[in-house]
Length: 166
Length: 109
Image (cartoon, rainbow over all chains, first blue to last red; front, top):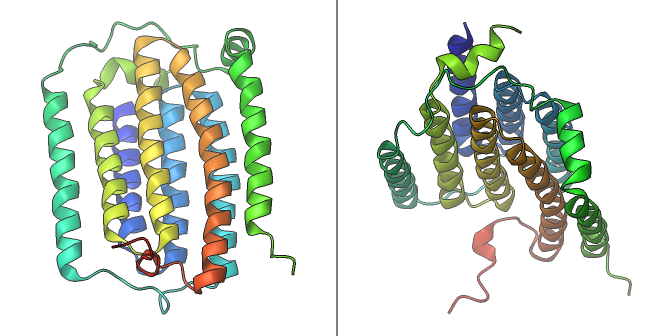
């Protein structure tokens, strides 16, 4: 049962990722990326990382993709304004992308059997309670520093996007 | 739910390795193939997500929660990066009236 769910989610995420790259209208790309993110959240639930699954849906599908859609609609981009690379460029891009995939897969092929399935016990590490304990004990300093990162990113975004005052 | 927790017992981790590699390569393909800067941004998000997926898979298979905290921080950095990047894109669009990366070649020799 679980492996069928995995294969379905993997199929869904690969197809929607391909549609992000190949669809002509940027609006469709954003919507397919939302679908891809939801299927990745499904993978997280399948791996019993519930906290990350919900954070992923809230942050990516909720915040980041809304930001993308908003900018896309603000700039009024559609398939008419979209320009494409030449077929030679596309062919070269597909060749190099597949070559990269083959190289990485071949390097993984040599590293088999370093984790055997069946050994781990029932998982409880992905729960909010467990992750919260780790995050606020061991990783409290990076957590606080990331708030500084957020506020500097926010100030930078506002300064960059604001109209010049003449 | 009981069946779902068995996923580490029935699926070897190679499946997640292959899936993450395919998603990462699709992201690279998108960066190489498209001219719209927003689509290139989305491909970068795709690559980040494939790496996140692999980290979560390893975390579950090796019973180590540190990787999930790491994924959490990657999400934080990705959110900040998208906010700044889209602001830069809006500024580029205001100056050149397009988000085509081919219009940004003033530094090209």
